Length: 78
Image (cartoon, rainbow, N blue to C red; front, top):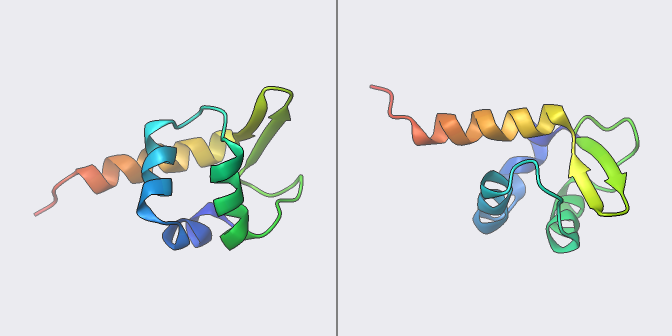
């Protein structure tokens, strides 16, 4: 499942954490919320980045998508 598909199913506080901490290690509590709506990630899932000893990271593609989404939400188009 792509980030575009599961993002709307996250609660607003989880979305805000991901926006505020974009690119940081994703804590287990946030990752659990993501996998509850997106399912367990496979290695080739587009939003999956590195899973290092210090923790799980979103992919560069997902980080860019979140940044774009956050910027679009903050703009006022008339």
